[in-house]
Length: 254
Ligand code: ARG
Image 1 (cartoon, rainbow, N blue to C red):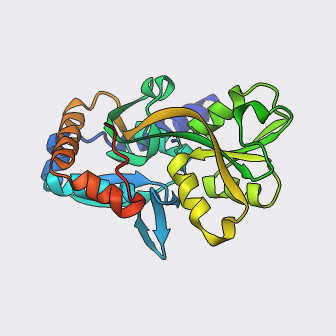
Image 2: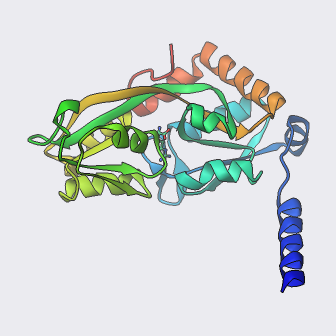
């Protein structure tokens, strides 16, 4: 039994070792391709149009890669497994609206922010639209997000229901299974602009956050290259143009 366990452990370790390696900047540059992960269920930041992954963040990383002379190989994973996938060296970078938090900084590094935003309450017109109306209410949020953290910090709520996708939390609100949804203010704006969202309203902002790309802790050269490209795209107006395409306003941080 013990020997079997030892062999299984050794095999597991060997698989982890050959499965993926943290790629430094020189290796990425030489390969000509950056391996990126996003989610594809968070419109208009990252979503599927048919079978095509698209959105503000997809365009931003495509522009960053172009600036660095690279192509992007895209993969999609549920939001709550992305930080782990970066830690396991499965991808070079994740871009899926990760807010910069102390907690996440313990296990991964962030680039400079590609936008600034915050968590907002969304509810039916007669629902809890103010932060001080949440006592006894049920909130719907996406799992492992800063919205889930914020919702759990609100005192006196009846329940915080978590969903694997943010769009599922929206469906729960529309279906009356939760009283309010906490999401990104630009996600809220987009959702409210859709004809099937009639009757929903955006309420109080609960917190603000800076959103950035995530990569392996300690990959300093990659960090510097990504930040250099972001700065160039900010300076030449590319980031602003991408932002205006999706939001009709500039959401980059000032
Ligand atoms: N901004 C929030 C956070 O940092 C939520 C991001 C959700 N992203 C997504 N692709 N669903 O946790």
